[in-house]
Length: 595
Image (cartoon, rainbow, N blue to C red; front, side, top):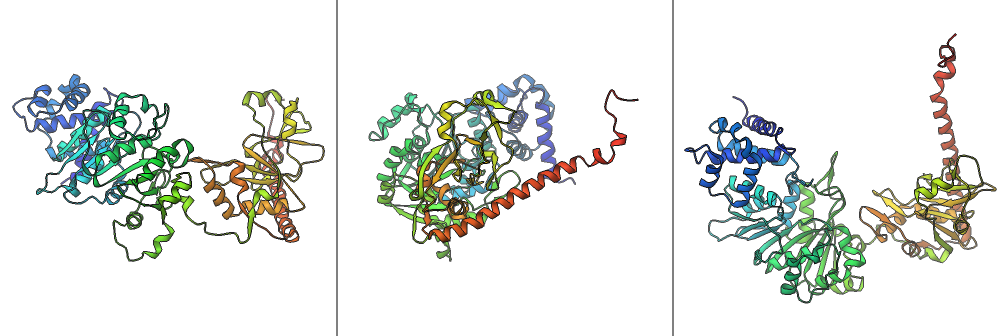
């Protein structure tokens, strides 16, 4: 007998294939077809689609979705109405839900991220009898898992999801129907006056990250005027992260708990300081969890999971950015990673409480308020290595400046293939700690560029750390008679060589300690941007100048060795590419020269 899973998979593919002629999202439409066939089992006296939907008393949103998707070709489904069991049709719905992308490019909630749902269930400590609300529930994957964890026949449970995208809300209803789960789905705005949404034990909010324009919406202004009259002024164009956080907090009971997914910029940039301050001052933030990048289905940037509750004098900062497995396309949470996070939150006991120190730090409200209300988790952890008797990097600096801002068109106008005295340095020209030997020539240099040129022995430091690759550092050794024009994405630092050796400072900046420090103090989410203010506070060991120069000498020798090896590698590549041409020239005849 054929395996049932194979039969269900074949059914899911068959329905999706049927829909390919009618839509660009066949998996989505196949869900509607399977659901209509599912309902037909309970209304066998009719084969008309409208009658089937009406007899089963589906909601207006589900009625609209199903008829819009399959009404014009329902005749293709009618011969199949008695072919498949309801259980197989139900399973095919979830198979197509997991397989397809829902309209708008966003995967259906956490549909293929079961470990993330497990993390959320533990983070919220959902238990039997809890009432649960999911703001921005998408296809309702979290709600369905929460339902089976919290539902109790002896309790008047309330399970509610709200999703502004009406088609997505209808899909969530379909899924709940097929599982016979008593979940109410509202296809409307979370701030709508018609949605009460208060008094829940546990609330999840996975709203769109960094969405803007919300303060212009009347529903949002009404909500904050009525619910949070002392909330900081809503600015036009502000991102909506903390507005959704406020909506989630308003939905919980006094002893309830909410978990909200927020973008990195909401946690530490100046534009959001007033909103962070509000939540901190009111004791609403229980914990901040920094999750790994490339974990969520909807974004590749690292996200934060913030836990809200009432009466918090301290905030738990949890570093989970490295708690994951790395798969081919995404990062994945393992059970042990989830258990560590749960133990840090205190919602799950662990025998090794001492080992949690590397992941969890407790920060008082006063410290947060004094620190510009920053919720950047790494900021509150000690670096793995400390500098003994360190002094600020800025003490050794005589001058610091940015490179030259040139648009692509401006650069094209002054670029030349002829050799000149002017060389252009971009970030990609710094590799393996040295400046490349094949720089672009420039001509007709504007007068204002001259003051930005690099001087001999200046430190050149890239301002961008993309994908954790680190900030590049090189010491300028400029050929005689040449001038070096740097791009805007580098910092040029002139050093007092009586007090510090440039190559010694380069060795310090290349060290893992300094790279971690600069990454922690720079700004940005997926791409970290370094300013001189971030750099000048870096602690540097105050060694005697003689010892500095000895370390600098070793660093320079290694840099020169890299230059030599690079030149040898380039020569070897050129030789390899021309082996056949040189060794078999007699069999090569140029076009047009056949004798």
